[in-house]
Image (cartoon, rainbow, N blue to C red; front, side, top):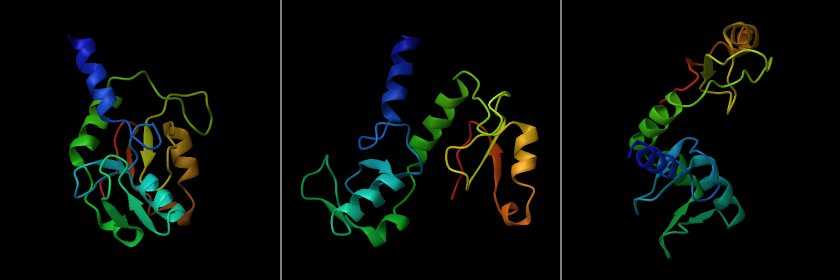
Length: 138
């Protein structure tokens, strides 16, 4: 039963377009969810229009994608699923377990030492620190 629940959670957090765990999941008015980046890239390739692949005829213009609501339920499931996974390797040194990520460094996770080193320059000071399994709330 627990394995079934884990499979259901895993299936629920995968984007239909990129087939990866959602990154900044946005929910469309038709109730389907996709990564914001997938929405933007698909719209860019289709005359600035995103047509939902699961709801034929439903389109969203590229300039409204940023304002689509974040799917907080999916984000919560990602946080739950991520907390059950094995430790993540630091993206910088590749030898320590990641403890942190930030809201600006896409798909990058850092050990404590590397986070401090990478985010020390003044230009990086506006990056929001989070735990490695957390997703930034925007």
